[in-house]
Length: 215
Length: 215
Image 1 (cartoon, one colour):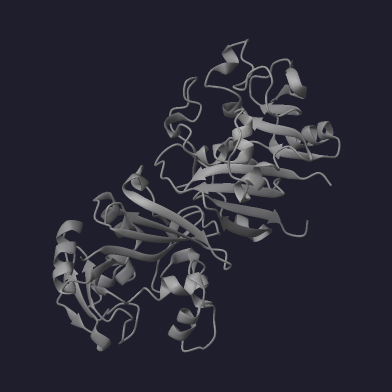
Image 2 (cartoon, rainbow over the protein chains, first blue to last red):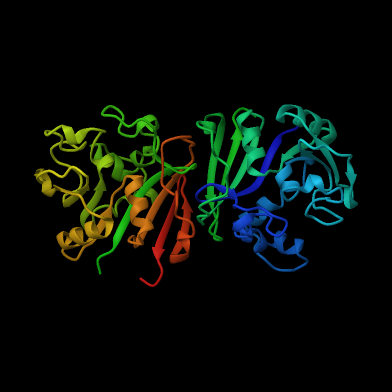
């Protein structure tokens, strides 16, 4: 069965998944990298930066679930690029020539453009579609594997509100960003459809998982 | 040294400390008791209800810190009563003739009234004062012991924003209330002045503590 999964999506204690003022220079606005430093202390995170060492506990274990079993990703226009990227025909995402996805990636945008094939198996496709239709398209591309709902917060919220997410993994970072884009708005009672679990780790973050009941 | 402490203050995962629609019948609005069920499963919580049994782990340990070393409480008007209580001269709080505080309690209100002496050592005093002035008054009454900042969320936020809280203990409950009164608004960067720690427990809640640096 192909699940729709949100993986290690970081939010601040006050619920912001990205800061205010996203730009080419500041992909997460005033938040900077503060929501993601926990990742860079793990073995997985350090290996991504070409370094050795790091922690090998729960934080690392969750990060290692990033690729296995995932056949496609859906992301929002704000994850793919800075405000205005659709006016730049050369923009190919933040991640350089070999992005870390290594699968088809469907970018939700009101400004579709031709697909872009990158190195390493990542191909960016551009869709102007509802969450349900985008998921259907991504599932076909995933060929029976899971689909990652990759963010940003607005996209994840839309998929949650539409009841399309089977497994949600949120990482609560104990900082107060104060402003930015909230993940949780308008999701009253979401937990009723899920088995939830919370586990804090020595890095200070808390992993909260929502697994759809009956799956 | 007399500290100002917030103790086991429950918020939903989306940051609400009370629901929408507080009334005489619904002290927490549409949230009901959902933010507090974790308490009622502990030995401490069950004993409060005249029952035996319950859990004896981290949840219980934190609850047992409620009374020791605390010499006074400050609470807001919305914690003391339903909307409009100040028009009811007979209103003496939600807690019956013997409230669980057993110390002086200072109720912040724009409608002060004469103090009310209850059974068991609780006396309600009514103050129209700033957070700093209220804390000064409560400290004198506490005679060297700590002052509990008892809530609700608006009062705690005001004390945090004024830099008056020495120890903050928040309990994140994995439910999404969707609406109500938020705790965290306007507190960007609060963590910079505190040592923080997060510990989740088998009940599903996560205890997040902020201890002022250098104290």
